Image (tube, rainbow, N blue to C red; front, side, top):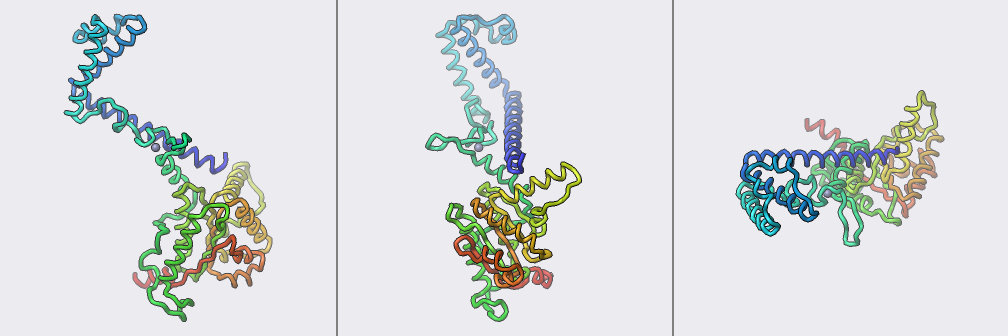
Length: 356
Ligand SMILES: [Zn+2]
């Protein structure tokens, strides 16, 4: 089973568990209410016997002595009523149940009154759209997104792509200090907008590579995580991984056991086929040419398969060119497929330290 299949089946099991829990607690509530309202419980039971009599009669059958015994003395005369009398009694009991239910705030047995985990799809997990096609219901998508996030390796945190975190970027422009003529806050607001466009556009012509650069501590990883979170909300499969771990997963290596090999292959396949791959901190690893060939192949294969890749780095494009050479740089410089964002500001980690 691939990691995608595992995540999907975990989500399906989780929904089934929640549906079961909802059903059990509904039944429990109903029986507690019935115990608290014996009159209502009796009316419901009586209605059940009436329905049974009518059903049996339509089949030309009688009701067994055993059932008559269970029904008790108070219901005994039901079994000798004519069909017309039974129909009248049925209407009377239904009206009584309605009235008592309203009085006690109890379920009258109508379709959707707290018995479902999801009233929208009535726990089918699907809703039928206007074209008659079954689509996954939001109840399932929410759980699915949760499972995708758990498996993504994304750090804990509040990642909102709508705008940069308040107070994170200086409002005052200082070209000498930040290397850009506009204020870091104004720049960041633009970068967040571009990033949101990258996350939103998923069509064939959309850009597949997002390169986020900037000095240490200006929130590159945070922005990458915001993009990832946006994709997860749309139930896209996402992997977040540091550059070292990505390069390791692309290497041919020796395994001590079948389990080890299977875990490795599952991770590698997920890295290659996830809808979005976040590679954090390009530049912190040991540079060896051979490994970059596999990284370039990974980036190319993912773009060709319409999958998105996000890479963060402390290095600018020209630094990448001098360190890694033209082949890797050309992937980022390709304007048709790649979007380059540069954040500027103060090192947030140092700022936090001085505040403390
Ligand atoms: Zn639903």
